Structure formats: C-alpha cells, structure tokens
Image (cartoon, rainbow, N blue to C red; front, top):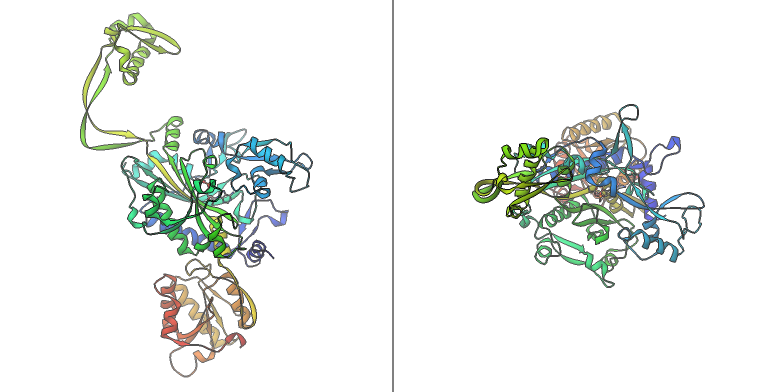
Length: 609
Ligand code: GAP
C-alpha cells in the first residue's frame, strides 16, 4: 500500500475524513471530516487564530460566503480565475491540462505556461486521456472559470457566486474595517471560512477539493512607511526555493535565515519575509516535519492576477524519500502548496474603489503640515452660462479637473475641454486660472496588502501524513500518529484495566478531573488493554491513563499509570497530580520526560494483562 493509500484508509476507518454523500454515490471533490478529523481541523484553526490573529494583534471577521457578481467583476475573478481544461474527444471527460503535462514530463509548474504551449506538450508527449486512454493530441486547451455561480433571490434573481477565496469578504468591507482600526495603518484582518472552487479534477483526497477552508490574513500597510519587526523572525532558519533556482537546470535550495534572505534580497518584501518567518515557526509548533517543508517562490507566469510577488509554503506528502534525498534534490518528493504569501500591492482596494460606492483609501496625516502649490480655477459663470447654456456647469467641472491634471493647458488664450465627447473652447480669462499655496495636513492613500493565505484542509492532510508512523511494539506491528499534544484530536484516553465497579468508578472520576482541566478525554472499556492502546495510537492520542488494582490498594494515595504514545513508556503517578501535569504538557510547559524523572517508572507491560 502506498503512503497515500494507507493514509486514506486510516482516515476513513478511524473517522478523520472520507468522501461525502456516499449513500448517493458521492460527488468528487467533497469531503466530510469525521469526529477525529473535525476536532483535528478545529485544533489547527484554533492554533492559527491564536498565532495569526491574537498574537499579531489583528482582528477577525466573518463575512458571507455568497457574494454578488459585481464583487468578482471588480476583483478580476470573473475575467481571470481560470484553470486549463482539456476535454477528451472520445469519452467527454474533462481534465486539468497542466496537471496532465506535469504527470508526463519533468515540468513542475506547467500552470505558468501559455495554453498554446500546453497543447504542443500534450501532442509531443502523446498524452492520453486518463479515463479512457484516447490520445488528447489536437484537442483545444481552454480556460475554465472555477467559480460556482448561483442566483440570489427568487426567479432569475441577481447573479452571485460562492466566494473562491475568503479574502474578498475582507476587501469589500475595508471602508468599515478601517474605521474600527481608527483609520490607522498598519492593521491586519483575518478570516477563517469556507471557499469554493469548481476544480476540473479534484484529487488526492482533501488536498484538492471543491469546498475547503481557508485561514487568511490581509495586512494593510502604507508601503512608504510601515515596516514589520523583522528582529522577531531574523534567526528563523528557512529552506527557500527561489524562482531563479527553479529556472536554473542545476538550481538548488537556498538554506538561510529570514534575516539573511532579506539582507541579500532573496525575499524582496519585508512583510512577506516577516510572515514566512512567523509561519515557519507555527508549522513547526503544530507538528509539520521541517525536513518535508520548504518555501517556493512563484514563477512569473504562475502568479495570480493580483500578485506582484508570491511565495508558497509547500509540504512533501509522498513519504517515499528520506530527509537526505529531499534535502539534496528539489525535484524529489511529492510537494503540495499548503499556503501562499502574496504581495497584492494596491490591486484589490484600487479595484473596489473603482467599482464600488465607497472610500477604499485611508487619510494619512503628515507629521508636520505641508505647504504645497495647487493649480485652481474659479470659472466665471456669468460668461460660461450665456455661452454654453445647459452644459456650462459640466464645462466648469471639466476645467477644474483639467487644472489638477494639466496646469500647462491654461497657458494660451483659450483652453479646450471635452464634455460627453464634445469639445468646448473657453476664454482663458473666464477660466480664472491661478496657482495658490495651500496647507495640507495629510493625504488619501490606497493601502497595500500583504496576504498570508493558508489552506486548512491541506494543513490537516500534511499533519496526518507527517505524523503517520509505523513500528513494532511487543513483537506486533503498530501504526500510530505522532501528533503534537494540543493538536491531537483527543488529549487523553482513560481505561479501567478490568470490568470492575471500583476501577470504573475511579476511572470516571479521572475522566471528570481531566475534562474539568479543559482536556479532551475519551473513555474506553472495551477489548483487551493492548487493543485499546492501538486504537488510541492510530488516532494519535498522546496519553493513555490506565486505572488498575495496584492504584487503589494499600491504603496510600490513589495512583494510575500514564503511557506516552511514541515511546510507550509508562509512569505511575498520584491521581491528585494527574490533571495538572497533563495540562502542563498540553500547554507546552513541560514534557513527559519530566514525569519519567519524577515518578515511578512502570516496567510491566499492562497490555499483556
Ligand atoms: N486569497 C489567496 C488565495 O486564495 P490560493 O493560493 O489560491 O490563494 C490559498 O489559495 C490556499 O488555499 C492554498 O495554499 C491551498 O492550501 C488552499 N487551496 C486552494 N485551492 C484548494 C482546493 N481546491 N482544495 C483544497 N485547498 C485549496
């Protein structure tokens, strides 16, 4: 069984995730998270919220998932949010043309190539339809818009779309959000929510689906002034794969720190660099294997229509290569994009300012008021009125606007303006043109946006893939998931060793204590203890607590055993200490080793009991 198959099988059997709507035959690209998966996903979201919203001092919002067409006309998604589709002439099945090319050639990012080149590659490599095997040479490669269309309201209603990214919900609310930020840049707004894309070929389970969860942060900055505190991440070690290295046949990784990468201009934007550093530490903390993790810069043809520069966080999910191979060869491994860090410039706010009926700018106060020269006109309406009649007001407005744009136009005896396609010549004296000194206290600017955008489902998949481990315990093969405490769906499992009233009563008290301490606890009394351990190992529960007779006999304080998942080491400790100690490990304040040092180690294998 390949790694991907083993993960899919485990995910389904143990309730992480599985294809949705199975009773009705299922529809590709839609997944249900089962009890383990939903909790794991929610723990990832909580960890993301804590790091990117709370610790960064940002604000979170929740916007609708359906938005009117005008939003996507402005954002450019209606026009340009396309993937390359090729349809088989034989069976009629549609496929993502760039992915077919990637599968049959050594090209890694075929998305960056024009459709005409993809058509040539399909022909030259004899690429066939993956469904029926018919050759695809000669078939057109077409743009396919990924948005799901809908109709808002009864009848033909108003056209709308399910949002393809949570980001637009933040951009369109910018005029209100800037007020909550007291009109002061920089500020950041986050959102965790569903996004929808009508993917041509959903694949790899929850890696490419048609409905998924994003966690996005829009950082609004004044590009002339605002800088991140790079000292917080300067020492973070990163493995970078810049565009120049990808384009070079012998290209290699750049292993560096965030501080050095900025100093040497490998990462051009300081805000992007800052968030790459924060993200690297966050991924490490939630359990991503850093030997299977890198940041790859987008090639120029690959960037989204709004992005000036973009780096992706990528994880390796194939598992067929060891750390040394993955370090030596950037082409080795099965890499997926789990987050994008884009410098979007002022693209989004300028577009919504152009199309929407609101102010998408911020008034930036100068440190000191500035005296500036301004060209102004004060048209004499007693001349313009009789001369131009009903359009006199529009001619006056056109003169005012021309003075701002092109003061030199007022140098002659007459000045010509255009109103509704008609030209009007105005006597320069009647325009009353002059240059005045004015004092200004600030200016309206359109903020620039830096956007870390995380795929939650792909992060969950990565955590399962990187946690997936196999070993032999007590001469038996075992599969376990080595999730970090705090990320694992269940924190502790509690077992009474035998079916016995006294043991069950204490076990239930232990469960209550642990739950009161805020831990997620499962109680299991079925099957032999070895099987119960295996069940918990497979869902990645870090600790199993067993209540046995030794712990309640002898008249001393009640004790239980605690078994750590990865090492299977056990200690016996008083029930009165249990919740506080596990809670401390869960919070990252101490480790199981400290328990091993402090308490009696248990050598007997209770799994044989
Ligand atoms: N607002 C920017 C944006 O949406 P993106 O690179 O298109 O950028 C961000 O998406 C993240 O969303 C990706 O890095 C990926 O993790 C996740 N994602 C995108 N399409 C997905 C899909 N079809 N299924 C699952 N996750 C997806």
